[in-house]
Length: 309
Ligand SMILES: [Zn+2]
Image 1 (cartoon, rainbow, N blue to C red):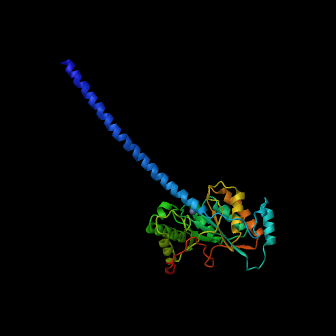
Image 2: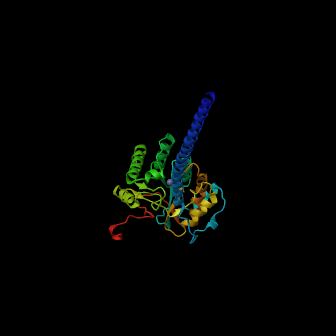
Image 3: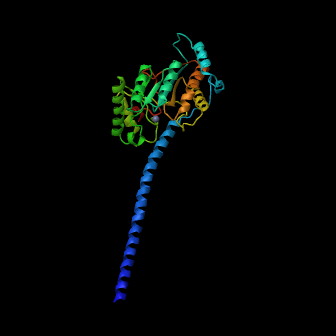
């Protein structure tokens, strides 16, 4: 009898073991699948962000032509530069060969005040395509941009590509939120816009033509760029390369819309800025302007009219 009881016990234990093994064999792959699924989703979002960043860098400057040459670039002290600039800057002149628009995306950041200080020292007005930030320093930055005569443009509230380009509704919601917020903080109703990734971005899941039509209906003008400084690549680009990219890019064009970034990890942009301004001034007959209603829109993708069809 004892033997039979022990035998049954062994069988029961064996059954339990088999049941346990089978349960684990089912559960473990399910758990692994869930974990991998989450990883894939995170990585796919990251990929989209990076693709979009690449988009911003796609318009690489072409070969240097005309009066602008990178040969002008030399190391020089800022004081000397300012002295040269004051001497070379023509007085009471209204017609210039080139119009230069410096545009800074993604701010405000810890670099904004430094950028504004440099612009002030060089007496240059620029355009800031900002995102939505609610901390006090950022609010001060928005106000300072306006107070010092620069143009406060919009670049989306969240700057999250997967959210803003999800649908027409999410796009409008994001941009309206930023527009109202900037008005509340600065008292200025912003009307200029830059699409994250540009109007030719390939990230958007929404028809860009629909978004463009909505902007036009709402009296918002969007501006892309025709000169890429390259400063968005990885934040590690040298000051010299950024300056060279700008000089090379402006070569052929009468209206130059230069893409720069106002971000905490783009220290070389701040370092390069004095050189960008001074080298461009030295190299040609130019004026630096903020975007206004008179500015010719530089647009990679334009609104299709019925005539285009
Ligand atoms: Zn951006």
